[in-house]
Image (cartoon, rainbow, N blue to C red; front, side, top):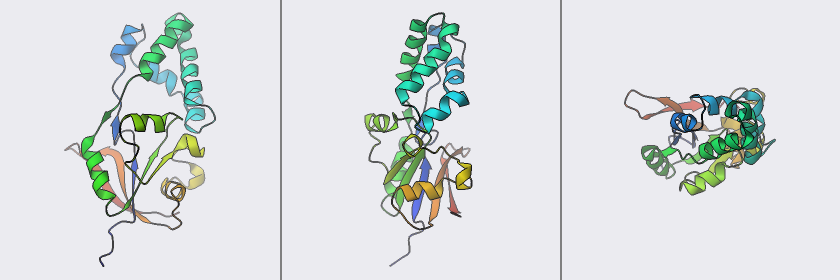
Length: 192
């Protein structure tokens, strides 16, 4: 029997499988400058509680609207802008989806994301729920990657969350893109 080249494949979700559209037109339609929604949503004091599960996705989006109320001129306009932003759907890279499905035949696949409590619903809605052997959502485990308590790597906690109790060799699919546009795959060892 031939040894498998990898025990597991670890991949990110956003920036690898899913690619979110720009919100510029939506922001202009709601009287916001380009980048205003991202600035409000991803402010560290607002995002960190959402991606570590201390608040729900709904609470986070409500806090984003609160942060935009003055800029929008009213709470109602801010809520409308956040609702429209919340309805954006990311494009799915079908080449990466096919790659991951093929890889599952020879290795376990774990996907990791700094996400809110809405991730599982979004993956289901986009037909991606069964793509991996395990999906590690930072909001469900209370840790965002990279976590310095985990020595800067997501491999140990991602794979242990999937029920694996050993240090594997993994192939990681990162957000970096090659000039051809394909995801980069690298072999790396987990150091625990």
